[in-house]
Length: 275
Image 1: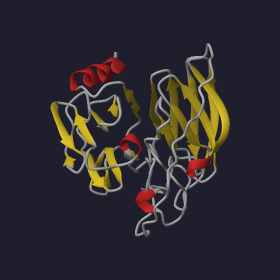
Image 2: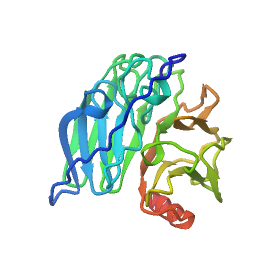
Image 3: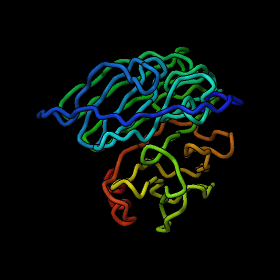
């Protein structure tokens, strides 16, 4: 989250029903507006697994739609909306560390520039460079997932990689999470802190949905990872403890959906990404 002390303002997040046109392309790029985020200019990347809205000015995801059109992020730029809108997103990586970058544009975000490096039928790459030129983040969209790589880190500064969103479209007591190294289903209100075992991953689910959203760290670091219930949204981060950041080197992460709520299937599919 990039703003502190804002008042809570409820933002309605309508179900998106973006049509999926038949195409030989497994990954396609368009340019448009994320209306549910407050009308922000976006790259719109459509895949079989998800539709991603990547906000162009701030350089972060404002929406991530599953195959049923449900948005698992629910960002809205309205000032003062706090956990109900303006804090949400992915990767929300650079916060008060030589700027505020790679977050969908809200009142606290600093602008970045972007360039489409690759646009093929199965891979779209978009690179964002911070306005001060000291940070660079790369988005690689594939048919089954999104990889985010922090490819340039401002010397002497730190970052984290966060999912701040709404499992299944809204957060409620029925939602749950899994993590690497522990096959127990945990309630969404249960917080956890500590370095996840390799391969480091966390997944969020809603019993009304047939799928889970996961985040994966492609490295096995010794840095703390942190999940905190911040109703009405989740806050999970690699490289975070409380409000401290710990990541200092270029590193790759993934976010995506697994079409199962079975722990063994989720674990297997996430491990497949690393192969």
